[in-house]
Picture 1 (cartoon, rainbow, N blue to C red):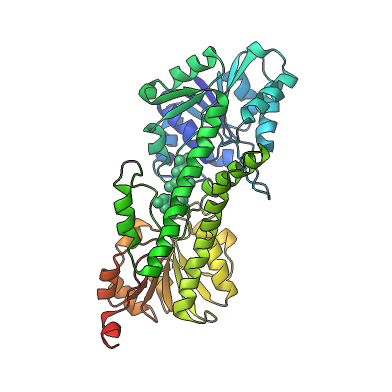
Picture 2: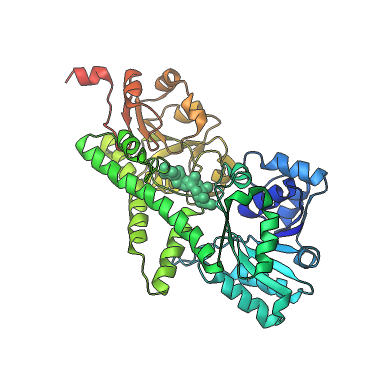
Length: 441
Ligand code: UDX
């Protein structure tokens, strides 16, 4: 099939590359000329495992190309995926102006039947708006259909998620649109769920909101564990073994970040209020999530006392491992607060250093974790990269000024850290101090 993907961001690039990999002819569009230039040179603007090699392969096979010309996309492609940004406005509402602009561009160039598919995460009723907008320019309704096909890929495993989906949601309003999309997703036919357009839009927002709420739930429980000296990891294990609850997304820590959860929760909440059906639970999820970062900072203050002129090593800037994405990363807010308190911050991240350099000021950018901890009063773990699991903690202990670790992601066993001689503080697990110090009390 001939496909155009309009908007070559995270979702667009992965969608385009994967469809090309599955044998379709794909044209990826973006109005950022620099990005198109980069992609044409075979460079990927984002770090995503497996993506760059897939793009290389598909370009070489002539299945994938890049352009900034949307007219060409509408003329040549039977299916047009809209994958443009829907960033949050100040009030949390989704900004749909890029979707409107693209809809108008499509409408102006519509000469033959085209299936227009929204893949960007959008509030319910956006599909109706796309249809109305196109219709106002191109009134011939037989020339197009609008469908919704939300994307559930996670950063860091996006290619894998796309090629092995849990489900493929097709929100359609006509048999023709359903037939085309079913044919496109034939390799995943057993996973297809067909709904109306609005239900498909809600599935995406409701899924992300539910998952984010699960994280806030476990973080709230973790605080109770902290107070009474229980172990959140064991609590989560015990809860998650109930198949009705499930073990995933019960990892306590410093809360969720990234460009999806915070934005989608706010947008869903805003939409629910606008519709007169306010979803108050989401307000609480967001509140817990925001407070969780400060809860962690308070732990640091509680054990280090004054932060002024203390040196702190922060490991992990990305909002989660296996990505270089730092949008809405908890690290940024945490570092900002530490700096405002007068601390000197040294940072290291395996992939996000280039992005971090653009937004972090007054920090020391270390070449590796060991350089980051050199002379620091404490080590603060913010992102649970695999690389950190195999750190040489004996070496770290020697490099640190004080053997204190604050682990915002519960990466290590408290007992093991204690044996290594660290004062180890994590989330929802008993604080561990070195044996010698304990026994001397
Ligand atoms: C999410 C959804 O998972 C995906 O389906 C959707 O398409 C986009 O949004 P993503 O933002 O890539 O994907 O990351 P995800 O792996 O879901 O993690 C989101 C955040 O939650 C991260 O900051 C992560 O650290 C945090 N998280 C996740 C937890 O704190 N605890 C958990 O148990 C799981």
